[in-house]
Amino acid sequence: MADDVLLDAARTCVLAVGVRRTTLAEIARTARVSRMTVYRRFPDVRSVLAALMTREFSGLLRTATELGADAAHSRERLVTIAAAGVRALSADPLFRTLLDVDPELVLPYIVERLGATQKFAEQALHHLLEAGHQDGSIRRAPVAAQSRSILLVVQSFAFSLRPATADVGEAALMAEFRHVLDAALKP
Image (cartoon, rainbow, N blue to C red; front, side, top):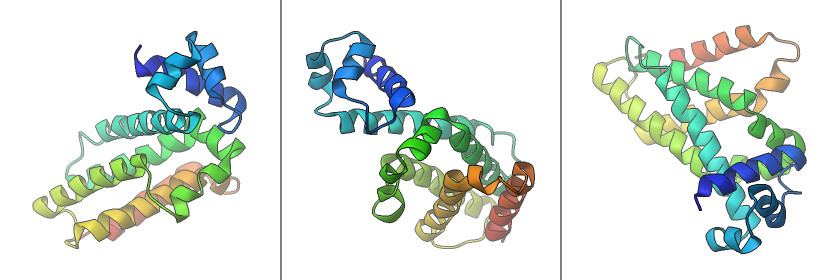
């Protein structure tokens, strides 16, 4: 059985009841497989959900990366991709459910450790920054610190875009986000 069937079932369950109330039994029922089938691939519900989050959020970031293909230089590409990533994550139903129903599950990824999706995003930023150093469009700095700093800025916008637009227009806020990144990276 392909993992995608199980992950799709887990996604359905999370959207219906949230992360904390999703069980392996419910995932199995939704996927129309036995619990043992799920247990053979995933030892517990936490590992299913971790794989789901990695698949979904990394997929959104891959799609955002495609939007920067026509950029004039690496800095413009990075800014375009980052803005598309923030919009995609903040609008994603799974991400929204996680923040709305089970926000305490996100806290460790903000204050304790980086997750797989954050590491994936940071690696993509690392490559874009190196390309920008090469083409002269991005200010030279230690890439590890620069990519981590950009990740933190992008992450804060992704987590907070919805409440931040309660009294400030999203278009204006995203324009400012693009300006902040562009200015920070300009040589």
